[in-house]
Length: 344
Image (cartoon, rainbow, N blue to C red; front, side):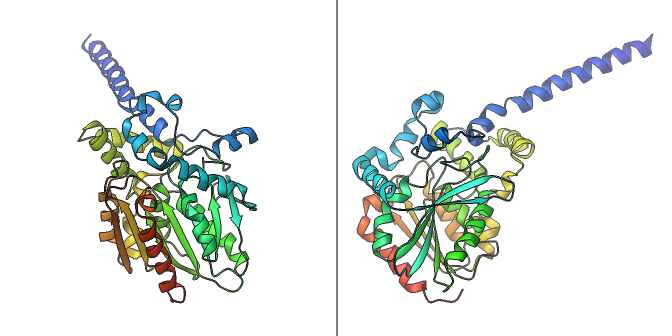
């Protein structure tokens, strides 16, 4: 009799434990899915629609349509200028390039060659952005300065395939593969620069810890993230006044491993910046509450290569070049002139 009672207790305890464990992990699923899901396989029509998007509309995620997402975008204060720059890019004669990622995705970029180029610039947009979104603001000036440009659609964005956004964990390898493709157009070994914004800045900083072509002379990181984990912590604290979310992050990381095939630990600039030898120019807006200035300060402190930090007062996310355009251009083109002939 006692054995039967113990067996029943064990069965009940096992069932209860299974239910608790299931609830524990499933409650992290909506957050993981919202943060990382990029929409899966896209039709040609969907790709073209996504290529014109820059930030989620309220109808895409009403529960997440907070004021921070609105005010921390160039469209909020600089809509006309933002749109005119994007439209300018769309009208330029560009070549469509495609590569296959290391995990089998078809990735897209637009290549804009100039006559007698002095250098190449690879432009990497941010979270859920597009190749002709906020990075377009500096494109005309880059052309006038003799820069051939490669505007990439990060995985899950624009015309590139992908199911999960990995905050740089996999995107860093995509950037490296684009650099290899760009080498075909660069037989004379002209200098190449990586220009990233937001998550794109974090991505190019992570790629700097890998073996890059010797032609890469510098990195420009505008409002860059430090890591996926810290970014989620910052959003919880600044937007929702929530602290101590380690259990939630643990669950999110479990889903990252199970479905995204990456770990949040891989989406981190720390190791890369400690190994990096390529000069970095950092920008950040002091009023940025989307990716806080502390993220760039962390990256700047970690960077062991030659570096410069430019903080722009009153600038929101990705608005440094709008708030102080002359200073921004002075720093960027001075960076080019300084490192064009350097040996890294």
